[in-house]
Image (tube, rainbow, N blue to C red; front, side, top):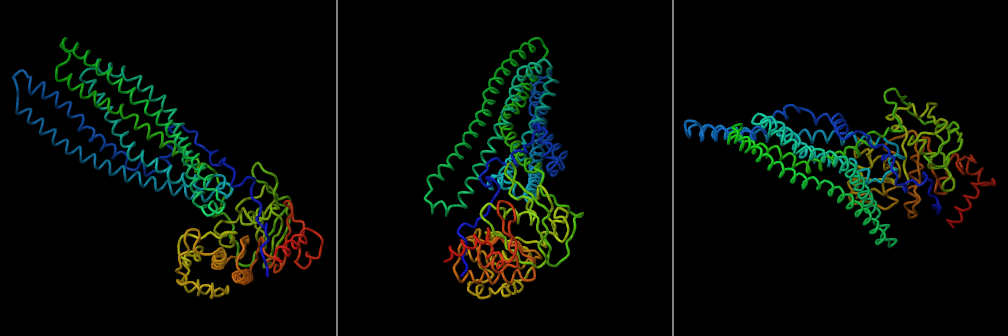
Amino acid sequence: MSAPAPTRSDERAPEDGDRRRSVLSLHRSTDTAVGTLRRGLQLSPEFAKGLWVTLALAVVATAGKIIVPVAVQQIIDNGLTGPNGPDLAFVTRMVATCAGLLVVTMACSYLMNLRLYRATESGLATLRRKAFRHVHDLSVLTQNSERKGALVSRVTSDVDQISTFMQWGGLLLIVSSGQLLVATILMAVYSWQLTIVVWVCFLPLLFGVRWLQKLLSKAYLKVRERTGDMLGAVGETVMGAAVIRAHGTEERTAGRIDTTVLATRTAQVRAQRLSMAVSPFAEIVAAVGNTAVVLVGVWLGLGGGLTAGQLIAFLFLMTLFVQPMMMATEIFNEAQNAIAGWRRVLGVLDTVPDIADPGEAGHVLPRGPVEVRFDHVTYSYPEGPVVLDDVDVTITPGTRVAVVGETGSGKTTFVKLLTRLMDPAQGTVRLDGVDLREVAFTSLRGRVVMVPQEGFLFDSSLGDNIRFARPESTDAELEAAITELGLADWLGSLAHGLNTPVGQRGESLSAGERQLVALVRAYVADPDLLVLDEATSAVDPHTEVRIQRALDRLTRGRTSVAIAHRLSTAEAADRVLVFDDGRIVQSGAHAELVDRPGVYADLYASWVHSSA
């Protein structure tokens, strides 16, 4: 009986999965805050759709607040203290007019909120789609440079921060800007002298907020980064819960989570400490401004340059002027958080995919068994040693090839280059004589299918997972495929058949059953080149027989390249490629190599010994 080799895992990129310096972090946006927001609007034009209508509604909504001070001034100066005495009819008309305009103001506020919410959700949906698709365009090496949880946070929680600002902070920004402008104009109409006093008092606040904005921008970017680290650590812990419990490392893992949580808390507290510094400063400035306006206003009034109604109206207007200043803390808080989120999302979108799809200009490969050609291919991971060194080999169409070698010999890199998960640093990989870089992705993914060591299953039914590559497949077609691979008895043993739920990552199935699902899924995809990285996990003898039988039928009539971890796979192959230190050191049939002194004979001897 064949058995898995005890140490048959393969090499990976140097520190791959352990590195914590994200490639995406090297693509941070260097734009200013305004430039970042401008780029965001360009990426999601829905944000700006109908903006002028929204601004018009904001102007009308702001007008309702401005009417009150003007009405008070008219009532005092013309309705109560006019030259002919109190005029109750005038006062009544003013009050009725204000009431009607306030109703219009409320309606405009409602419509403005509704339009802004719709535009925001549409814009964020576009942004999420672009970011998600771009992540899938990036190479596996780039994706693996960042924890999956941290990568997900760039498309989810970072975008949510933008949502909060656009729906709330953005609304305040529009309304407050209009309110500030109109209040300033009316104050100048009543008294340009008092308006100068107000601006002189509040200029220090503006400069202070501008200075804090730079600090807040860095602080909130750090918050988003720490949040991403925390989500990444938590995600890894949840997915690896069984391993953690099996090794009794709960406390150590909890300590690691505590570290990321505390780092996030520290970053949040620092950002909040900076943002909260604005409010006390603004209150002091407002108190000084009110005092100065009252003193100067009374002096102007005594000289006949200002009426009582105008002074009271000015104080009302000054309140409307101060409100946006006082809300600056909350607005800038949300704005800087949103800008930090934008920059992290832009960090994804600005990362140029190192595996480019030639698109419509690409070649479409004809159907049929594929010829594979590695033409003096060399590859090394970034900042790492050479892992494939001048590999030169041709695989004829319809050949079953087994790839063997010690851990770190270059096997996994070989199949990643074959499926174009990466591109070679030197040399060329060809399929049917065509440079792999010139083959359209749609053709490549349709012709070449890779079955990884651990076949990933989605939290759905067995049938949905099998038809993943061809969603149009019927249940009858799936059952026919299962029967063709000799697995009808296995399907019959499942109570719900194709409707059997597999759970998250296929946890309701055994490791062997997950391998069977992956093989059937590959069969349904109907590739012309099958690339297989055999699982290293041990399975029961009955499942082992099923897997081998399915593999035999799956590879029939196709070119296949399998990283062999089982004796039976190497023995059944038409040709065996033996890797050692990044080179192909032996090539030939099993019967030829097993009797020839060398790397393969040594590997075979260790396999036989482990299965004895």
